[in-house]
Length: 416
Image (cartoon, rainbow, N blue to C red; front, side):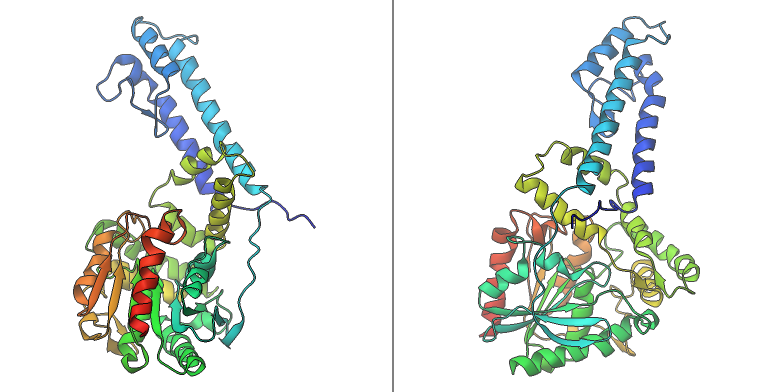
């Protein structure tokens, strides 16, 4: 059966409204262009992109007739044509994405352990050096196993490691009552026990993004059961960079928690709206570019694979959302040494084991300074600073050479 059209990009209403606002603001600001205001000049931007040659020519013609302001103004006509064309390209890109034939076909690896909705998936080989991989609670774990040729975990498996992936899945009734303590003590620690029992030795623990904080807490609580620690794009000092944005997210913690207390979880579209706020025109730019790609091209398939993952989020337990938004972003508890798990402070300085901190230089989700603070605080930390973004470090064309290979080399060195 042919799958139906996708529902993304999520939240679709916000993306469409943002694009419409950009187009209308460009039209409303057109008198500044005709008046020769220094705020606008040939080559400036309409809808976040440089003016086309046709628009610049029309602007010059319009400026040569300074008193003209009629329905046939050449610049207004050209501007309207430009905006209509850009709107059509954006909507065409969304429609092409929604109907693209690609669907992720990678089968899940064998199940090693399960508790509630949390799974431990074994990527093998059985004789590989054990690696417990901890992803974020917010997004699906398969970003680390996205598609053929775009799977960090299958690459690590091919390099003699045995990745065992913690897949949190969406919270069920029990997990909707969870806080961070519960996820770490009741889910992550038993997963560590299962991994160690299966491998017969202490695993290296690797965390990605939010999962890095959970991995760090695990290593701090169970140092004798963790051989080494790798943290990828993991925030620590949340106010080290873009502090006002972090405090704004903190201010939203209580209103969001109260709004969804009865439901027990914060819906995916609400979480997506928080990411949307970082750059309201991201979807406009990327879907406009996607409209230009050939449907069967590798670039188009790669775009769709990643976009499918972005739109396939999971809800977040209300208590966890309150702790992350309010405690981490709002109060910067980790960076101030005040974050506690089951009553004990999580202090990087006390984590005495080989550590690797990977800080993507172009990360907009975890600004580099917030992650560099963790490399500074861990006593035995090495660091990598690939020139990639938060997701690009995992899935970009350059990721295998810039991140995967040196990461595998470091992990294998610790497993000896």
